[in-house]
Length: 430
Image 1 (cartoon, rainbow, N blue to C red):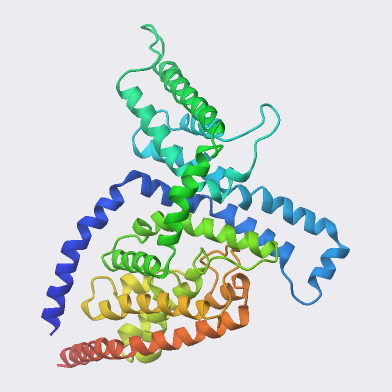
Image 2 (image 1 turned 180 degrees about the vertical axis):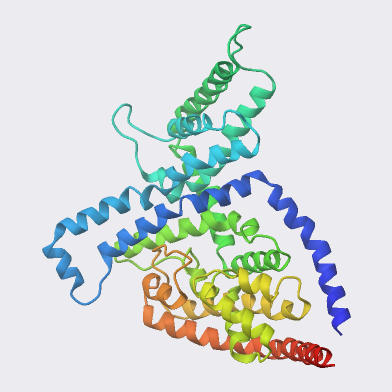
């Protein structure tokens, strides 16, 4: 039976490993994943500022009314961090992408792309740049433009369509001037593009991208089916020893955008529009990717072998704070045929469970407040859910079910470990 399962896992690995490796080689996706990690302080601090401004517990809002300076400071932080999140992505993504393409002008890609983006954004000359398209609503535009500007610039430079300096000019000076022609071409094209769109009903190309690409992508990618497929694929990557960001990096911008919509509705006292947003995985993945904390607790509670007890004891504290590597690689779950079914099955079950309890109204939607993934699960529910008590109860029920799913598989693996330990003791005694 074990040999059959091993062969089955090998076949899965043979199919999925090349696909995952290709995804990891896609520079735009890996650059986007790194960008999202780098700008995480913007979302976290902005979210907590929003929490300070709009949290409604006991007499807290009355306290804010008596101390308006606190509210002003919090709202200023939120408006210049979370509300213009796309702008911070715009500052970093072109640089990281250009670096991965091996461009010497990677730093220059920052002002070049920012200027290009502002040129295709409606504005009042010399006086006003509207923030609407600098936030989550313009995130897909930011990603597309970063890709296009960097790629076009690289193409022009590779074809030597650039300013060439006389012989004897230092190389670093020549490299600096080389960007002038590509920059002029890109900026003129962007300015013309905005001029054309300004005379249409769309007003800006951002409106077209948002309507045709971002909204449909959110509808599909943030549906129950899309969420389940995404998290299952990410968990398969983890099982194969690859980073989950290989997959998650593709949908993360959509989750941030959905969280921003929920946050705006929460601030305005309106119904929250999105079930799945950035905070959804706080409920659907216990202990971050792969629900590794569920596995850790299952082995800690149900196993008797010294091997699994020692591993789970070491892994439990990191697991509580969302770090699953100790159990993933230490048990290991990775490429373990016996662990495959519960590891993948629990993630699929949790997506359906979390979506269902929110959809039928047992648990409220997430407010869009971005909480660090290192915050323990139940505290995460308290800070991010619009109904923290119900969310904590739902999480507790989910955890019990996860433990029940893991139980028979823990026992199978534990029985084998106990037999090996007994054999080792007998060999040592003899």
